[in-house]
Length: 165
Image 1 (cartoon, rainbow, N blue to C red):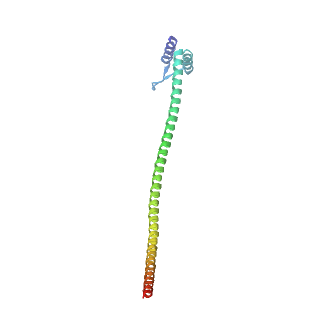
Image 2 (cartoon, rainbow, N blue to C red):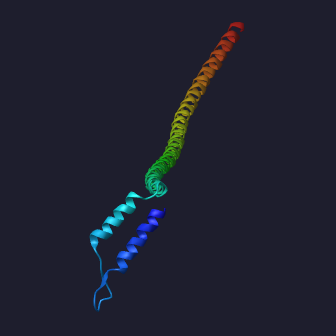
Image 3 (cartoon, one colour):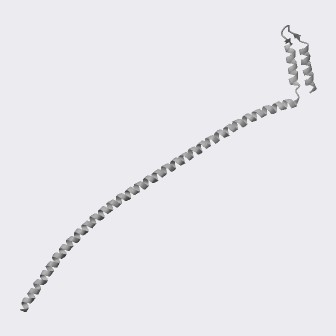
């Protein structure tokens, strides 16, 4: 550390012994002498300062890596969130479509039931009409048959009456 202070003193001495330029407030220094002193300072820098510089460089590298990793994690999380959002949206749409399909199926079933009921009612009405016709025919035939039997009974009775006379 003492060597560094000596070099700083030497730089001060070079600056003090330099010529001042008239009317400018600036000085003229011997460039090579200053550069030699700076090289000597670099050669004699304590290990702690070099270690600190390495630590700072490593810190910068670690921070850069951490930023890249963090950016990657954030991008991955955003992609996953987008995927989950899309999945949720797909689920919502699928649910809506399923509800529409179920509602349409219920509507179709109601229409089918209504149509089937109307068809069955029509067929039952036809059957009822036919049965009424059959009954009317049966009644007419029964009436004719009854009339025939009644007339036959009357003829038989008259025949028996004649036989007895």
